Image: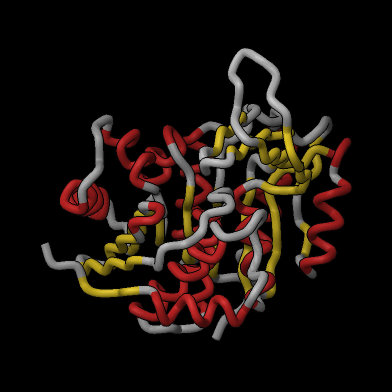
Length: 313
């Protein structure tokens, strides 16, 4: 079994999450309680993987001026920190969670990345390729990094025989698909954006995913929130349905799902086991604020309640 993994977060963020009764647009909204922590999709994946027992290395680009919360988190996780520091401050993203479960994300663009930082990052990737097989590249792109550049990094990793799990959206996802990562994890909304039409039913997802898989992508994982997960693995479909959860926050549930798939493969679980484990892990994530495996026994109980079956349409 392989416990070593690299997570790549090109555009990390400090997440400021506020819980409030309801959001009053154009007026004053009162936050009941708030939380401020180091995040970004790849960072979230790293946190979950480290709590599952992985040997995690983190990289990407980090603002030198406000890196303390990230450094503290990486130290607490026991992660090897290979982030390239750039001048300026890492962005702050605001997430407003209303009592009815609605989450409003206000995402800022991030620091501009220059050629010297890009070169330093590419040298870091080259070194990490020597003793890592799994690479999780997750999140949006900062100014200065084009979708094509991101796709080139995926291609480079794939050409060196690495398993790349890629989770992004919009132009980055579109370009990244052409680089043939080993796994992608769009949700139904991101798939709809990608093909510029509504993807709602299981049949819609099957049609779109099977077309994408022709590019040579081994695993297409589509998350559908409370409706579960659909997974196309080399022309074989599986689907899972989680138990009904009391939703506290959906922030980080998708990142947790990616971590679950990564860990399941690293531990050589069977395909149904991987899907059951990842779905339960993601379901657990919505019952808490912040990502992480807070309760191992609750996770085990949830796994027993996840329904997994081959998909027949």
